[in-house]
Image (cartoon, rainbow, N blue to C red; front, side):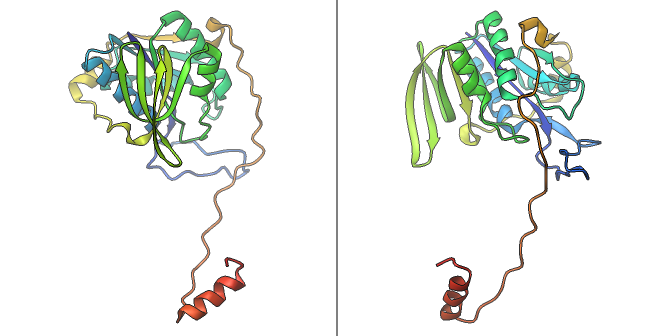
Length: 252
C-alpha cells in the first residue's frame, strides 16, 4: 500500500508574524519557513505505518512555490521514499486555495493509486481546514478528520477522532483520506545521515497543467490586521466589588 502525504511550506511556528504596512497580507521577507506542524505529524504517521509493515511506500507531495523543495527534503529526511512538487506559483505571497490543491492532489492520487492519504488537519498560516475534506469529496472516498489515533485493520482504517464532547472512534473503508490532529504522535528529528540521503531521493517537479488544473483565486483578501492589544486588567478588593465590576461590563 502506498501512503500519500501532502505537506505545506509555512512560516515557522516560532516566528512572530508581521503584517505588511498596507494591510495586504503577511510579510514573508527574510522569514524562516518550515513544514506545517500538522503535516509533520502526518509524515511521521505514514513512516510509522511503513515501519510496521502496513505500507510499502511513502510519497510526500507539496503544491506551491519552487522553494517548497526544502520542505519536501525534510519529509524525505524523516523517512519518506520520494516526493512530488507541483509548482503552482512563482510568488511566495500567493497562497494556493484549498479547492485548487485538492484538484491537483486528485490528479496525483489518480496516477499513484495510494491506499491512504494522510493530511494535516489544517495549515497554520490560513487555518482553512478544508483540503482533506475536499479531496475526499472529489475522489468519492471515505474520510476521517481530527485523528488522534490511526490503525489499519485489513481493508478498514480505525480512527479515533477528537470531537467537542471528547473522543469518537470510527471505522472507515479504504482507500480513505485521514486528517491528523496534534496528539496523534511526536514527529522525529531527521538525523544528519538521513538528511544527506534525502538529497539523493527522487523529487519530481510538475505543474498544475500536468493534471489539467487551472490555478485561479476564488477568494480575495480584503485586509489583514494584527490582533488588538490586550487591555490592562484591574484589581478588586472583594467579591462584592468583583461582582459590581462584572455587572458594569455586562458579563453577568
